[in-house]
Image (cartoon, rainbow over all chains, first blue to last red; front, side, top):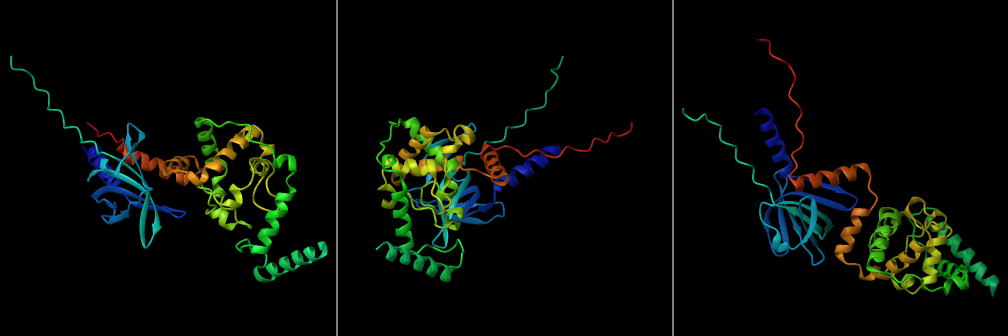
Length: 118
Length: 201
């Protein structure tokens, strides 16, 4: 029970995501809060909402079975896990690459086995 | 006439040194750039300059060249050939924007010669001696790279994204990439094991 609680807590922490940066690239990691035609709003681990602009050159990949498959903005849904590689532009961020995946629903706990009445 | 040219070069160098010292952050003057570029073109043997690319590139060859460029060249030239990288901006002279006419107007033979022999007094190394070591497969790879350089003005966003995966990465970047993949895969981070203390009966 304790291990499960720790695992769920760690998974939630990981799922909430964060923002990294190296070089001139910014990585925005979290869950999709809102999708617009020209931007995405991502909720990060710190609970912040980060808006990232989309461009005609932005490319999309959906991660399925440990592989990135080409996708479209229309395939993205609120609640999806997302990793965005962006560059600073005009006091904001512009996405170069958007990778996303659909969260897997946790398996329901199996009912306890009961002995049939004799 | 030659004397005038020599004096001009000396004056240009002196002016550059007096203005910028020896910092690599400086940008060559237009005169210096024109002199250097033309001197380099003249230094390429004429038979090398007129050599045609013997490789008829297939899609597979173009992809291999693209990923080779990502692994070997993009550190200075960037994946799109712009030269706008940390190292590119710190070199003197800066790597040229390979998409522009100054590079695209070079012949296939000139591009090949530069890849194989480098450019003296710049950060461009010679790859002819690499042979089959360190991932550069010799002349064939260099000719394929010439095809890729021709393609640079038409590089697609998807091609560039693929190249980013083949750029050299340090341990921190690889760890970050793995962490992002784990996040998208929904991989649960390993929890620390509980203590192994056994309760007495």
